[in-house]
Length: 482
Image (cartoon, rainbow, N blue to C red; front, side, top):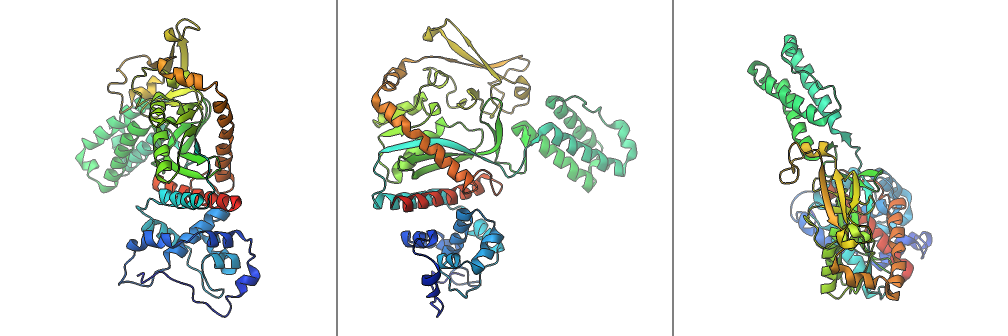
């Protein structure tokens, strides 16, 4: 039950804060900079006003989470430190003698109170509003980039998971009928996923055709587990406890399993927008969202600064329509004029490869046509047909029996003549010098505030982690500029 927003009940010991917590303490500065009552207003509907036990202030619970992010500590450690660290108690609006919460309350707060709350945009909007009101943001440029975060869980090869689940099913069957071994299909001994899927489906079929076995609860449970794994494998090819995370690529040889955070930031290094996706998503397609969200948060934009991933034809059209300059180097692989399936195949600028709709990276590329005659040259990207064979999206994309799957793009388009000329201007060259700033911001998020790895499973929890980390770095930056 939440009757009203809790306020400090001043005690005879409260004056200790003036002696112990310095004026230049970070937490004191944050308390003086921002009125956290907006958290109460956002979450008040998540509490009952006339039933149940008295709830801890949502503002205080949010501040506990903020302390976790600022100092990169666990739930248990942030609560423990709040027992004796007077700057923590001051920040939490507690009296020196007050008792702290139970650490398990933070988990409940995240799951029950912050669920279905667009915390990411709420917190970014709040800090951008403060920065604008303080006159900190003067530029009209946004710098865009994406940074990756590793999943808390490791991915497993689909073929290994299938073999483990089929083995578990066989062992359970043999517990009830040891003679059933004679009726089992022949195992797949090759490292071929398609053959392993075929074996598992045949195993399912034979057991289902024996009601005396398949009706046994223990067998039925393992059978359903194998069926579910087969379905998941056909859809994802990579399995993990973190079902939202996907494999992304940092280069042709280097990959990661997790998420991407797409960021927009002013030249003053205040983050103005963020979109969190699974790891396989391309950078370029997220630009329209980042631009729109930055504008909705009160930023006037006349220039977008980014790398080659953002210079796609659709992005240039959107920017030109608003008379916004795009300071991003053209790349022939993403700027040709008649690219088919533009909304499906994304270009990964780190790996210099296209990614198919199922998230698989091209394994190689080749260039054809007459050299130095752009209109006649084509880049052809080749995909792994073994993955195509079992892909649920293969209809209309891969023809059964085909030995190759390719995707071709022409090198040059007249649409980009203006952009090519713009790249040679002094304005372009000057603005391009600011792009390094967002790389430094990504480093701060990862190395200082633990954004290199997800602390929970699922994209919703990743968005919550991103919200707290971005809120923290924005507040610190505002204080520094003030």
